[in-house]
Amino acid sequence: MSRPMNRRQDNHKISRELFVLTYGALVAQVCKDYEKDEDVNKYLDRMGYDIGIRLVEDFLARSAVRKCRSYSETVDVIAQVAFKMYLGVTPSVSCSKTTENEFFLILDKNPLVDFVEELPAGRCSLCYCNLLCGVIRGALEMVHLAAEVTFVQDRLKGDDVTEIGIIFSKKVEDKKHKRKK
Amino acid sequence: MADSPLFQALHMEMAHALCGEGEQEKGLGALEGVGFRVGQGLSERLTKEMPSFKDELDVLKFLCKDLWITVFKKQVDNLRTNHQGTYMLQDNQFLLLSQLSNGKQYLEEAPKFLAFTCGLVKGALSNLGFDSTVTAEVAVMPSSKFQVVIQKS
Image 1 (tube, chains in turn purple, blue):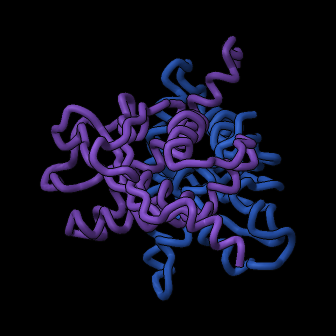
Image 2: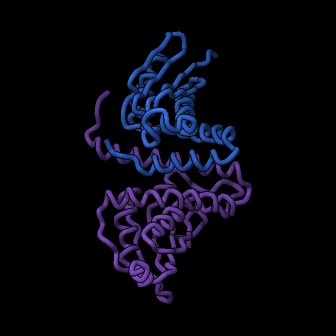
Image 3: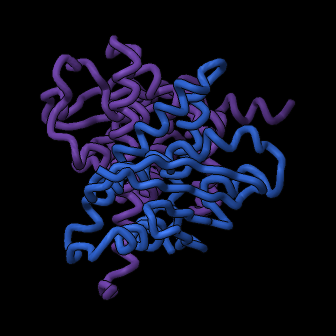
């Protein structure tokens, strides 16, 4: 068997494809088990959460990022380090003009939907990538940041972009306060 | 060889989530179903640029080498056959069991972590034109054996 030149790049690509294929098959299975889109979404979010609380350790070990001192820094790390490391893409970050603790990740490219052209029939409320929201939420919780993470816009649902919203619900000062006890 | 933390994390979570309390049987079937779909898709992508296989044994060698390396980061350690459609694939350091234990602890949990792979092998073979049954056994973790029986059409 001849070895291609860019073996390392191929490996990363294939590794990601394996994950994407597996994720797609999982979503199909969960859709079989749950009739309501809402229930599938909750299930995916829950699974993501359980993955996130463990994956964060892997992330911190691999990335050696230093402690973030603000929500904005935290979101930047999620977008520029974590997404890049695990999914090979870097969403752009924006923050809400009205709400201080609200940030948005805009995914121009979303590898999770590489093999998905459109939502399955009768599944128009399905948040196909909801696992991602759970992962982010779980990971944040492990670094003592509580946040609500949802898909604000979804290309699969006909929106122009795919956008994840992160709303932090505790002030960073609280974390410092906790440690003093 | 590039690591696959996302895939491993997802696999472990699927095993736990799908095989919850009192849902073992159904869960194992679901896991195998997920693996089957992945096996079909993956073998399709891996064999796209490859010349067609000479025979059944060639296909099994592809599974033991290319497919196994792609998913489990190493080749199968031992492939045996009776040359009558039955094959035994042995992996002494099976990736998906390596985080569970070394030895006999949690042996009863092993089926949850093998079902996906049984489906994967079945699905890959199916995509390449072979119907099969695939079962797995573990005596001492993380070593596992997968038995493939190709159905004669």
